[in-house]
Image (cartoon, rainbow, N blue to C red; front, side, top):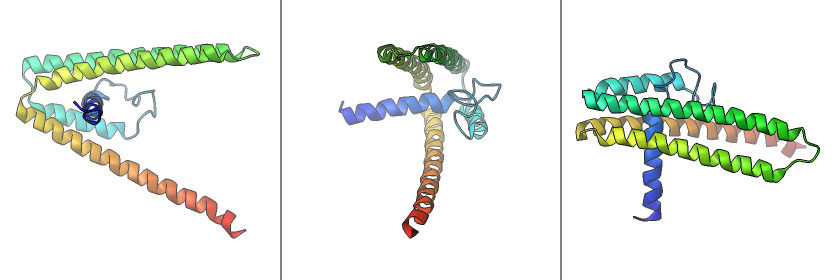
Amino acid sequence: MSTKMSRFVAVAAASLAIGLGAYAAQPDGQGGPGGPGGWHHHGEFKEELNKLHGQLNLSPDQEKQWQAALDTMKQNREASRAAHKQMHDQMKALQQQPILDLNALHDMHQKAEEQNHQLREQTSAAWLNFYNGLNDKQKTIVSTALKQHWAKMEARHEKMREHWQHHQGAASAPAANQ
């Protein structure tokens, strides 16, 4: 498999993991990854996810896989939050030293990256296990929902780019007039 295709498959798997359950495991509505405000429009997405779940007409075995993926995602999300808090506390302690230990900061960052990667992989594997248990009709429903979600995300990103470009242009205009 080519490197480009491997990256595409990895992105698709990550999108599936995010797309299928990022908010279903959050009954408290506390936002996406990273806590409140981590992702915008999460209420809308949660509705889309619940709608998708209803459209899939899952068998009892498929429902077990769905719930297992949700549980894995929720546990990994909590583990990620706990690790983030621990790293934050360690950073504060390191900042109290008169001379920063950049090696310790680097090692801490590397450890966090590795742990987060492992948690994302576990979550992706659980969602892929669920997806692989779907029939072609159900996979088509999921594919359509993901494509619609990606289109909404791209439209939002484009709107943000336009806003930023407009903001950049307005900020540089007074300097040019001087």
